[in-house]
Image (cartoon, rainbow, N blue to C red; front, side, top):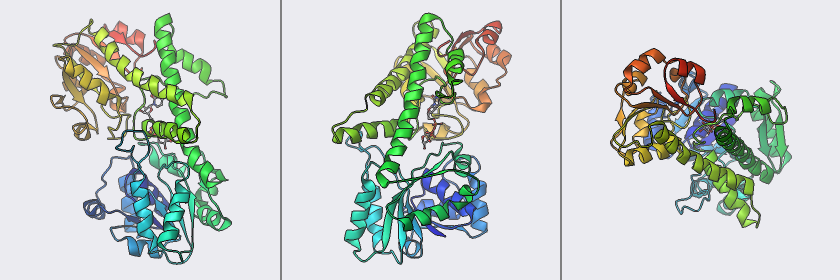
Length: 435
Ligand code: UDX
């Protein structure tokens, strides 16, 4: 199959590369000349484990190419995937901004040749595929095409595994022809028994929002239970185990922490709330999850303050991990982005380390943070250490060394990585989340 991927952001780049790995011929298009130059020089603009090797391999085997020329890329394609950004609208109303999706649709319309399936890969509100269809039809009345929806469920840091071994592939189609093309594209997965859920375009669009909203609800639920555990003196880790073993609940996404972040959950929960509002409906459980998540981030500031004896003013805090989760350099909506400024404002000094995210963090955090080379340098002379993101590097710290470097042996573990008893034995005043 000849596939064109429009947009070489996170989703476009991973998806395009994985399709090439399946054996398809993939052309990735982006307007950003510098980015295409970079990719053609073998440089990967994002940090995603395994992606660089896969891009290199597929470029070398001539199944993957990068270009700024949309016309040539669209003309010979069996399917054109739209993987452009859909950020939260600048109006601040929670709606997804569809400008890039619509612009790309208009632009590609004139270059279509032969039957082509246009596939929405970006997370878009219900009804977007129909809009895309209308735009293409108006721009090129003679075009022979269908519009389909094929939402992605990739986790950053595990995107390639998620792509190659998905729980399911969702396709929303309006015709058998379009379904055949998408089934052919995903055939290598089908042969591995990955189920394909084939449904209407609207249902596929909504599945993406419903999946992310449900996962956000699950995290907010366990975060609230963690707070309840703190109040009654229970242990949320055992609680999560106790409920998670019930197959109806499931043990995944029951890790309490400083609140969810990233490019998906915060954006998609807000967008879902707005979409349903337009139809006169509401998703009150999702609204509550969003509220709980903001409160959880604020609660972490208080947790750190309390651990420091009631005030962070004049204290030095070592922060381990800045990104919204490990194995990514993504800082979007990271809990650190709301927690650290609050501490700085009250006159704390922050010594921060992150294995991949420090450069990116500088775009999201105020000036005045001291970025250091490793966890031990961060702890040197600090009055407390806060484990913010559970990178593997922080899972087996030399605790005796940390204890000897700290001014005060205060350890705030926002990801419950360490065992409270062990930490107490080592002489730390240890605070976790919900235990
Ligand atoms: C998510 C979805 O998992 C993926 O299917 C979708 O396509 C995009 O959004 P991602 O944002 O990469 O992926 O990260 P994910 O691993 O889901 O974590 C999101 C946030 O939730 C992180 O901040 C993480 O720390 C937090 N989280 C996750 C918890 O606090 N507790 C958990 O149990 C799980």
